[in-house]
Length: 134
Image 1 (cartoon, rainbow, N blue to C red):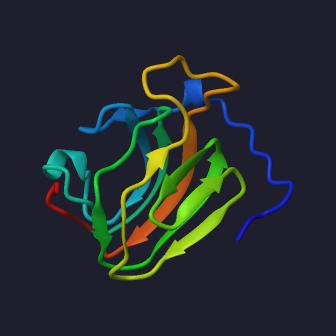
Image 2: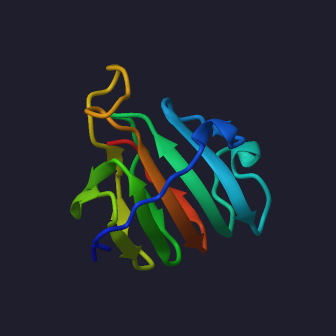
């Protein structure tokens, strides 16, 4: 589903971004039911609501959702096994779904209007299972 006309203005420099163990990906926890996932070896909280910023061309490795994950793309976009998702897209990943999200754009090139970072609002229930690299 796409929300036409969605426009969000966020002062990203004012947010307390935290680096992740994945290059080019930062996040701001809004709610974590089971503590900080990065402090727990990268396993995800049982329930979390976060802002995620993925630099162009960067992404998360393949993972399976234990429960439902809901995502709203606020800026830029990403692609995964479901296709390409741009600003204004709302996605709902069911329990058991697997995906490998990667921000659109050119990795290593400067971020800007023609090579945007992807900004997401995401809420996950049940956590995720990281899958072996294949």
